[in-house]
Image (tube, rainbow, N blue to C red):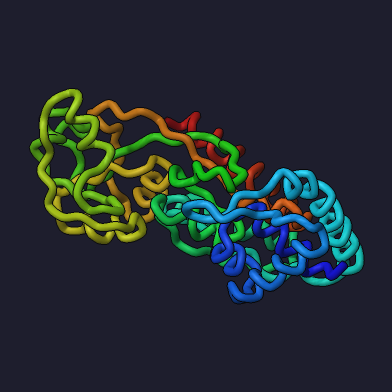
Length: 299
């Protein structure tokens, strides 16, 4: 049997859609259809039945599935052994820029020491597109605080973070912003949508409204945008500490109670066949757990 037919079968089982299977395999939809026709002839069964929105496997296809995956796993392991001494290549890391600000340099350094044959490529991501970019292979690994709840992703919690408030102009009492001063100051909002953030959601519950002077979608320039103003910005604590140290900003607890939130790492389930990727993913996961645990003790 042509091994490529098994690959098409596996992609159709995973995606339940001929177009997505074609994208995943990097071939045309007509090639997928042709391969499915050959598979139907071999197994004397339709294997996949067209339904609204895609395809559904027959009972025969479900019966075949574990055997096909065993074959593909065996071939994958054989190739890993034959290429064990070759370079792994690139690893594409998708992360929001608050994660990159706080931990990007540490992750790169640790990866280069542990896996000198690879080159990390950090790509910025937002929660509303992270799952899509993982599934279409734009990312190998994603790290973030949202957008990873897709059933085709393998995700794990690596810790949690909270929020801190930064400003170039210190609080009036010199130690911490009061709620009154916090709401009186103008705010720099950092949000992918640019309209509301965690503080605004919390104020809906506790009452009050803040004054938004301007908005941006990136954390990396927060300190530059605060320069020369008395604006305040409430951002993830891990990024706030780095920016405050880098630019000498005033750092304060946020006087509006905000809940801690989880940080997760995810890969696509299909990529779990790649032993090198699994090793790198586990390695990064361990680093982040250590860093986030250490940061939690500072909060």
